Length: 164
Image 1 (cartoon, rainbow, N blue to C red):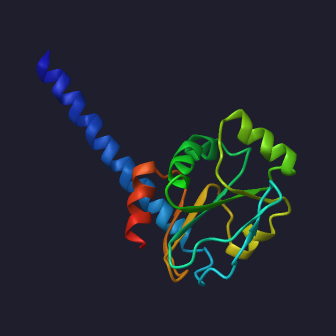
Image 2: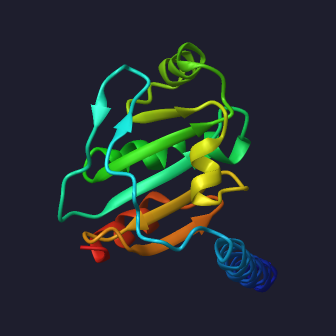
């Protein structure tokens, strides 16, 4: 019986490694289409009516998501955690008006900074076509890392720390 359990555990472990490698390769492939220029946006108009100006000389995480995206819902808690410690701006694309987005955030106890990209113009500017997409810019606003799809809190934390 122990040998059977050990065998199944080994198979599960190998499967998880394979899935992780596949997911990262797919993300890398999808990231090739993103706008690779340095970040040119210096301020963001938030859904609460305020303007957010990211701190200079610090990395910033720009996260594109949508209320209708199931992966975005799963990743939202990760973005929430990271937003407590780093410069983070999220862009809700094609997700309704400010009131709709605010209701979505309130229902999930999310407090990160959000821009409404109701028409998708910011997504076009950054060349975003898949959600969620996360771009980390270094302190000089050059792309340090990009990811298309789900990313863990730990992964985001490490990448933000390395982007310094």
